Image (spheres, rainbow, N blue to C red):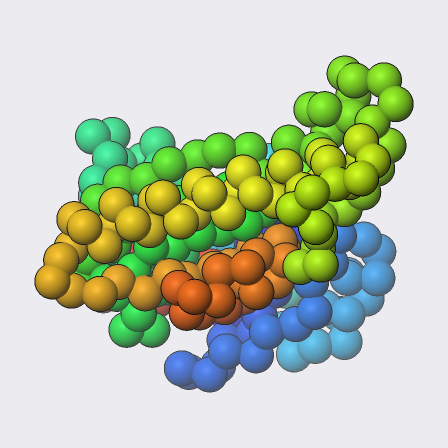
Length: 250
């Protein structure tokens, strides 16, 4: 049994890997520290053989987990970092180790789940967009602010904006400043996704790449992208961690 952890800027997800079976758990929010309830949950579980982490949040969280795992379980902790090649995926970056660990894990996950060719959209604090061909070659990607960052940028610096979270029912034409911000944020993200996926499809023609959505804001975007037949992959990063665990090149 191996414990897999996907740590983002505001929340993290976990899963227990037993053989090829992945048992994902409900996500937890964090404010830079692991909730005490999570430790209680772990203590009640069978001790893992090892812990694998994909962390793009605070580095202190990895240190806290390492201390807990070594003291409580005597289990080794491994942190996923991008490299040139792993688990059938070839990294497009000129400096492979500078690709974000979450984007790398998502690429590994898409390949391991036989979802390539694809556009991979991670809808988190940042909106990251990556393209992967059928042979596992990463074409590169884009990064733009996610919905929360866009909204906060306007809300923090513009008086009287108000707060409205975007949803799949957000109107195109806002009738208050808050509604207009929510609509603009949503449409900006949708436009970025559609345009990126269009370029991916043109680059990979005649193949028809899938559109994969993961991350906390994915459910908000799925309905508006329905014409592109998006595939919701909430555990893509965890699946990528599992692929790394099983990689003979590890």
